[in-house]
Length: 238
Image 1: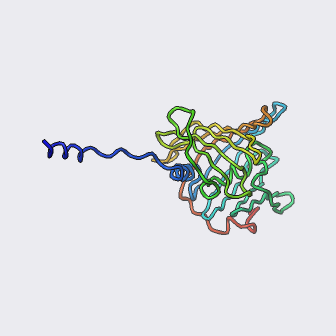
Image 2 (image 1 turned 90 degrees about the vertical axis):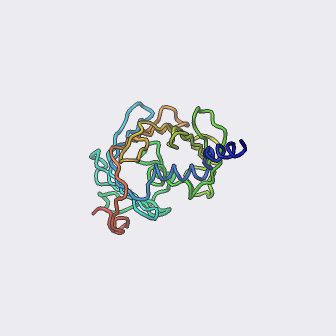
Image 3 (image 1 turned 120 degrees about the horizontal axis):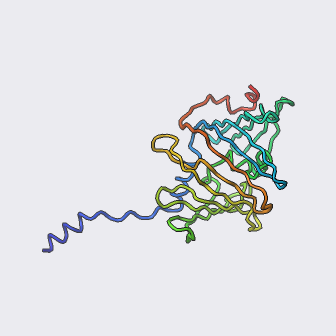
């Protein structure tokens, strides 16, 4: 009987432990910002007066925290580019034929995403994470605290689905503790076999409630390798 009980205990697999905060954050980064990719997306920004403006763009992500965006429309911004290399971000204006440096916290094209929201989806490097109680069923909740004052937000809270670790919503805070933005993630799409992520993110301005911006991912192909010169200032406008 003892031998039978021992055999049964051995046959029962151990329950998988819940992932750690660090593991969940790395999974988020890998999903929302693969190491290299090429993507097509559309952003719509709604302003206080009820008007809206749409942008179409192409993004190329390279190794070592490098990325580049080309604006395809509207006509007023066609030809503009945004380049990120590490902590440095530049906007290239074709009419001036030069690039101007901007901050991670600056608004992206006057909308409610900032430059870091679009160009720097890699939280594990910049934030310390801890698991906290979640008020959303079947989710984990992560609280992130900035490691440096140079980050776009002082603190972030993310809710991730327990089924696959994909984000459901986010809240973004300034140094005063005030919530600046909130995000809703939806339209989970399999862009490649085995690779699913939210195709739609709505970022709401918590300081000006009538403002929001919506980013819709049209396509994404991982593993696209670009020549290093594509991520240099000298290549802007070419």
